[in-house]
Image 1: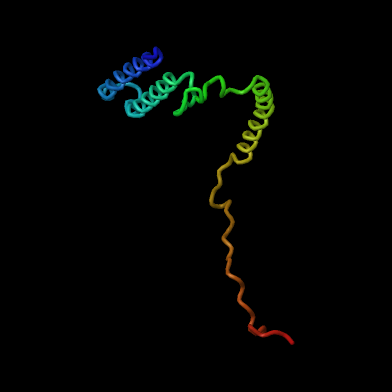
Image 2: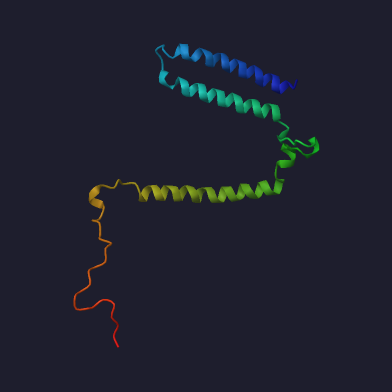
Length: 139
């Protein structure tokens, strides 16, 4: 057995012991006892994802046909130049995005009440006058 998988299973067993004890502790006075089901869900999700990545580690996506075709961490990563360019672009664009978020928050910071909403306008066309006959054309 892979040592990482063994350690992940030990961690999962440890977490499940804590999860089993949580409902008993839910009735005890303490902070946020109503959040116990949420804590159980979060811990199980964390244990599951950690165990999955620990058992798959060198492979990002294992191949079902041949191990030589598996996508590994090394061949899935970008080159050094690509990572440097992406870092520079991210450092240049992130402040612009943050400034835009601050600006939109500032513009839309006030609540809208009913007196800010204009009255509804009718979408029905105006009635034709009786002087203009309908369906006739001028000759």
